[in-house]
Image 1 (cartoon, rainbow over the protein chains, first blue to last red):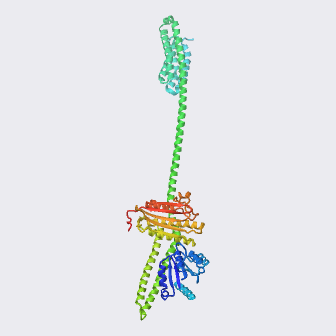
Image 2: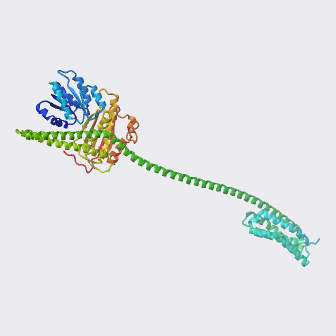
Image 3: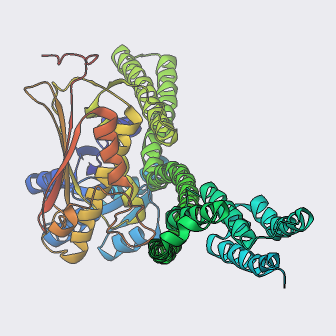
Length: 131
Length: 467
């Protein structure tokens, strides 16, 4: 299962690669990284059908996570075979952001610091559904 | 009736003369002692009479003698008064008549023959002497009146002078009074100025604190991120160690995997250090920002400072308005080097410019949300002449021309009451121009955006740009 992580903090890559090292090694998950909303859209443009899940930070310079979510939902609403799932992650766990994310069609909403154990469970569940 | 008794008619005449003299010359005031003595004018008359009686001297000239004596007294008095012009005139008036009387008396006493012979001439002389006498007495009267007039005039002048002097004194008093009150006012103003200066210092401090308040949320966000990394990396490192231990217990150990794990561990520890330092530097920055400026110059890397405050300002605003988003563009000149500057002061200037820039793009976004990308850019440049330039640009609302001249004035703000102190830009201007001998200028177009340009001179202690 291919997952695209979008965050302006570059160290997120190292972190995810280590957190999911076993899953990556076993080929259960594969991660790609984008460091801005714009990067993420460009990546999706080239790899639309591969990405199953997008994990995006909300607070980023330039295009925000919510804007990205909106764009994804508009552009990839019904691509074959299935639209990608989008999970939002934010440091500001406020109700406004949550409501807005849900309204824009986010599939989930996580707050920082990310509970990787819980995230792993969610991803595993999702992967099993896919298979 | 005895011949001698005619003297008793002359005595009242003498007293009359004395009286008129007293009145005319104001003797009691001018010659008080002589005036007193004149009370005894009758005495010589009486004495003459008594002497004549005793000597059995019968003559009809006794009153003439007495009169001459009285004239003599009058002349003495007039001589004493010779400084007084009418007195001199009267003196002149009397001289011929007295001379005439004296000669006549002399001739009478020595025998009347000569007198009778020249009777006509004597009569004429007496007439002339009398006319002379009365004419000059009239002149003397006029002179006296004239003098009196002059005296009154002088007195009036004196009075006027005194009045003017009194008025002058009053004026002088008023001036003194005014001066005193002015001095007091000046003193009060000086006190007010001192108080204002103190208030200004307090305001500057509170402006600092207000901007710190704006920063708090940004700082919290900025600290949260590195802290998350520290937690996550130490967490994942524990997992890596666990895996490493498991690997070592296995009979078929994979040395490659073990090496990879070790490399990762080392890398993680470096990441932990890095993010720990990142958080520490943010806290340090916050402390520096709130601390009163030490005024100490140190080498400052404007690229680092600008980047740090750009993020702080951005996250500060985001914390207030979650929906707000902006594109941040940075263009840092790698050859910038350092400048000798007061870092926390420059930080405040940058924070202020960034906050304003974000405010401007936020306002524009509120007005026309569609198709507008709020953008704030910062650019540093090492100028050919050695100066250093920092440009903070936004594509926000711009500044109307009418307002442009006022933006650096203290307490001028376009923000609603309570949102801005109106001190940000004026303080920034002072910090750049007075504190660092630089310039702070603005280029703006209403509706299009604004660019603030800081130019700082390359100071002596600054490092040469590295190539």
